Length: 413
Image 1 (cartoon, rainbow, N blue to C red):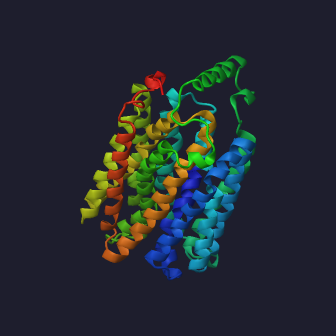
Image 2 (cartoon, rainbow, N blue to C red):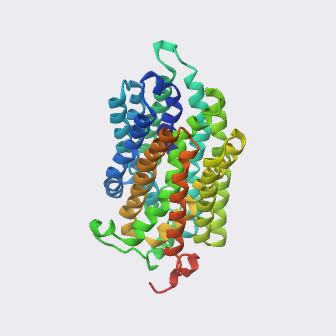
Image 3 (cartoon, rainbow, N blue to C red):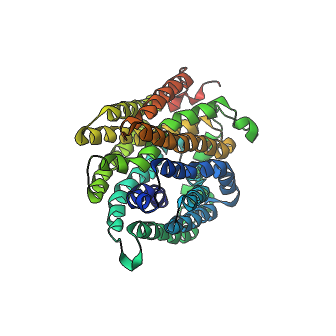
């Protein structure tokens, strides 16, 4: 969770940095949007290979490698001098971080029985809104270091938020244990119970069985799950990059923007954990995934039509609560559909496609609409349409009720 917290601070701090950096480098909204989206292109290209490497070399070594490289690249973003160097470093940052999230999902599947996963994934992923909640005011404060040591505030922002990630990468080498049977800190009886509980789950029929990668990329369940995840990914990624500029368009100062930008993320931190625990308690995934998606759509359409700061902040809260409450039940649902050996590539494929479409494409779509209309709020309308498509896909994919309850796993597939 701490690793992911730093990942999202490093990934999203470009939104706050843009308040100074775009002016200094004379970057337009289109240039900034395109450069930000390159993160997701390299992320997509490297996601599956990275997750397969984690499966081969173990989480301890591979997660440490990911953190070391992305921390170095994130800090190096302070060296950006023009649009070209911005493009290169955002592309490298995506390649460095690729595989972390699906790798941790795979890692958790080695440790956490399925009936606990929605709450555990929600607790792990609370690092995303927490990263923005803490990152926004922190980044705003770092921007106030403007002029110290001859550097601009956004230079200090990238340097001081990137270096802790490098240090935590070294810590991973000492603290992570790959699998339960290697955990000397568990009692023998605890190791045996956990190993047996996880082994019994491999006997449960799955929707996506072992298959070559070429077939996995064409599997309808994997592709549909990727489209569904695109909804939340697009909402979270687009607002992570553009929300500071949307809020500042109402005449706020940099510090006011940083503080108000953190409010929706604070609310999301609390409610996503509650929603994940509720999904586990009632052992239901389908509607616990649909309801947050509907909240995303409502908030997006409302924000695109809003013209005042207070209703805009309230509606942005709805979008981000939905985007993050979605994650625990959704990833538990996805895990229920993937067999153990297909999980490494399958989870990475779902996440990679969702990030490419949700982050890479929709971040650019937002920039294009904002430039064409002059409205940061109206640019959210395409995301609302995407949400409706994703909700429809999920309802059709689960229409036979196979995923409504974990108890239904015993059905013939």
